[in-house]
Image (cartoon, rainbow, N blue to C red; front, top):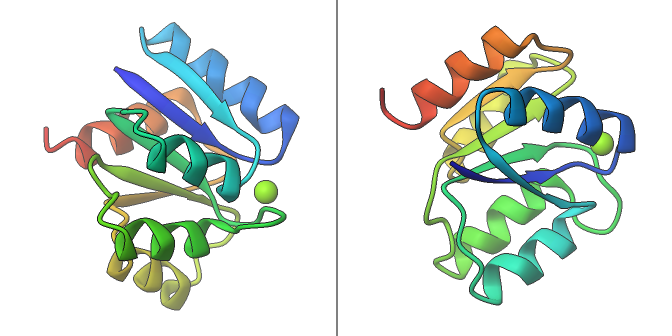
Length: 120
Ligand SMILES: [Mg+2]
């Protein structure tokens, strides 16, 4: 699967990229929500987006709103959060995310969330 990984942390990008590549996915990075928006609005297509919550410039929830407003949610989006605050998660799901995963997570949990988001 072609995955867009959106996270401002170099460490998280590196860890999650290794996990995704180990299970056979192709990974492209965006360092914040604005970079991700530019890729998606520029016509780049992905089969899954993994999206961090806290980022400079454009945050995860702000990106969800921008994508939704522009009809650009065309694949499952899994939010990566550091907290399980129910209200925040509900907001993301309302804005168009399919699933969420709490950081830090194992490869097994990530796989499970990807499967759930992809409708398996
Ligand atoms: Mg972050």
